[in-house]
Image (cartoon, rainbow, N blue to C red; front, side, top):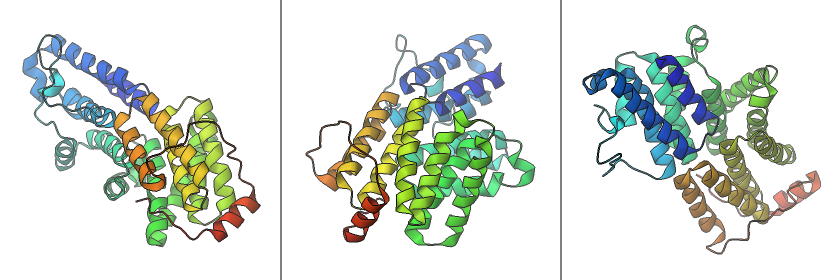
Length: 316
């Protein structure tokens, strides 16, 4: 039952279940666990401490909530507020030091995702480097589910390849891309939109702007069709960054706004607020009305506009 619970809450997060609903379910599962086994087991419960708490922390941060002053069910604190370690960084440090690799893998996944969604890219790189260090060996890679680590590894490494020009990041991004290409053969439904987005980032990094534009649009469309709302949001924001960089301000603004819409629909209100601030810094406080635009990008349009554009926006 514990293993099923761990897999259920992790898959629910990765499949973009509503953040508020999932947070409620995690709380309910924690209460059920302590109801069955007693509060005296709480301090020693790896299920609550190392699997439920890190996810719950991530959900709170994404939604803009916090633990301060939280009371539920008639002033009774949730079991998730009583655990010994409340902070994800502390939890991750303990799991590393005690070599609890399964727990470490789980909390690292939530930390990497959260850092990337808030565009804390230096922190995201630190987390994906930890994954690269601890789990990329052949002996360990087959023991843990690498899908989302590999997905974010690619997005993070291509970002730093563009920023630094260092070939090691390009190589890591391309290696992650090749893994996604293999996985699509097994499940097009689950992996196609992720592959398209990583293809877009790869082409953007290699300055193939025409191909990148096509891949970005396809990634958003496939994510939308398959109800991966958080990945539609991610693809939309990265599309906005790309189009802003090559001088297509109107398209960039629309994609940013679509990402805000998707993040809010998922329940990641704090992330949506961050994107809103990005728009204000790029385009001012007067935002365009969110409406469909023609996002098709002919090669001649992209190449011509890119070559004439001198203004570059810092997307760090």
